[in-house]
Image 1 (cartoon, rainbow, N blue to C red):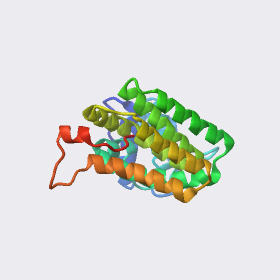
Image 2: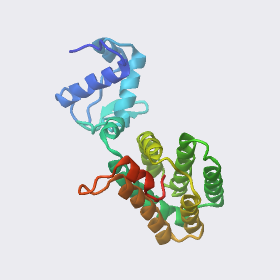
Image 3: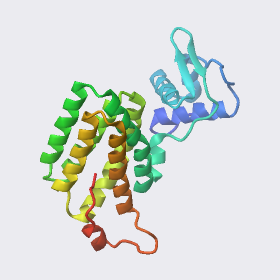
Length: 242
């Protein structure tokens, strides 16, 4: 049985526990030993064991049942979101955003409350004001899109959007620096039209506008192989940016 030797301890402990599950030490549905047993086996404290269990529970491998203990609910785990996103290029992220945000826009048009609309309108107004720096603009733009996703009433869609935010933010900042301009009136109008569709309760139109906006970004960042875009060419393309 290996012991944890390197930081971060919680990650190392989670990996060791997952290795033991993968090796067949515990079967599906088995109950894990208690913290007082696992801690010395892993060479860590009980709080680190709890952190490792929390991580694996978040990945669907373990489940904590109040008053009963911790049980194995899967024999392997998909790669964690952060590791996946670090290797994803911006086109992959945009494609995933399309899958999330187009459906979210449709649902938001059906389910938005007065409070949701107030939050989206406030985010749009803030987006229009925050043009002093690329970072501020991207953050305000992200807040607008998140407000629409939140208005869908589907907490899982919101969690997925939040998972993509760090990778998307860094890529958008880099791209807008390359382009050199951002936050013009046409771009703001594109977002205002999406808000209008949501406010009107027109799910099909909201989904269409969301998809068109994200596809325009995808087209901008993925030029055809036959004619790769140079920095100068990218800077001249007039499409709505996120």
